[in-house]
Length: 310
Image 1 (cartoon, rainbow, N blue to C red):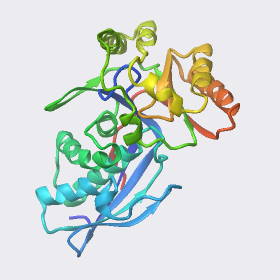
Image 2 (image 1 turned 180 degrees about the horizontal axis):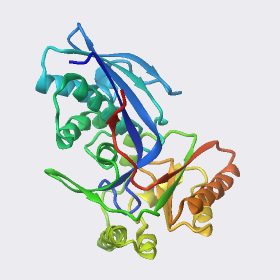
Image 3 (image 1 turned 120 degrees about the vertical axis):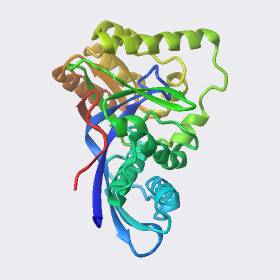
């Protein structure tokens, strides 16, 4: 048995406008790294946390990286001790899957360290224990693309059923992340408790249209389908310059634009990497008017998922 393993888990865009809690895709570039090592002390301890500006819990049971590993030990190797070091590459509360990446990287590292050889489905069930801390509920639209990579559809939750969706090779994503934090739990609490039938029909049609557009490479259909009539109207006011950024994206050729996860990040889809670069620059210029700082990213849609890196 090896004594130390490091795993990487990528950032992700979830909801994808019309797919609240059921769609997401992995991003290139930023991600969280977790190193797991054997310890003589039973249970899970956090050795160090780096790379973040916001204080995070150092108690394993209160940090999203801890509960998945605690559950893995309880299920597979009780009495074993594991210490984890967390290096955050994704801003906390930024809407691109920070809590999911920590949970996934931790459980992937621990699985490799302990040689438990769990399936992705089993790892997902364990990673959910970490995401519960951040969101207060079970949702896997960040966790699943983070683990699987690519673009995923969560077809059902009881039982969880993950479907990988083919995407056009030339489809790219622009992401802009205003430097503010929105807590997932708060963003979920402000969602409407009842949804008019008309909105349900619109949202369902858009979700079906987006999946069809992905499989067929129909960019106009993808664009028409990237419309959220449920979560976005309730959450847009939380994000400075939301309307300005969305208008700028669409004016510069975006297929569609919406809130990534709970926000404050926005994503826009484009039919080429060059277009995605122009779009994210325009979004940045629009947000700059508000005086809010930000970071940007251009990525393919559906990058690689979590993996052991050392």
